[in-house]
Length: 144
Image 1: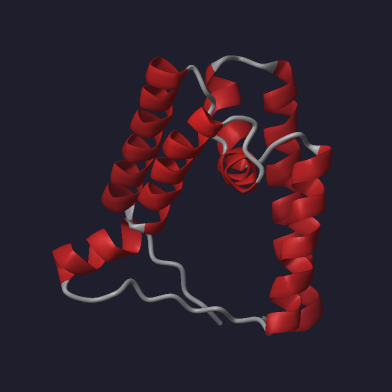
Image 2 (image 1 turned 135 degrees about the vertical axis):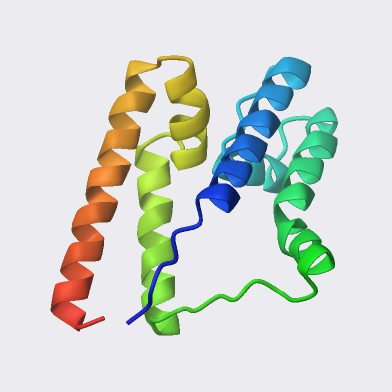
């Protein structure tokens, strides 16, 4: 069984950085910072001017563990208690959800709720409820 440590200061710092990045992207580019939208737009850009900021946002997301390593001297510990096929199935289901939900938790949860978007509030509640039920069922059914 994996033990989740309560890390309020790190969680607060991460939340502040995510919120700051979302506000800066909205203020400077007029764009919502949804991770799947940023990635999708990088893979299939609508215009050449879209590539730069999308690549910068993605690079910032990926460079987090590198920054953590420079500050602490070691990579963050990551435990994945499920098999590769389970991860692939989970990723596929998340992709379906992102498509039908017209966005992901970062776009709806961080940016949409901040704009008081009813669609984003509904989507985020659906994400959270589904995640809770899934964790409960997987934990009960698979003994993890």
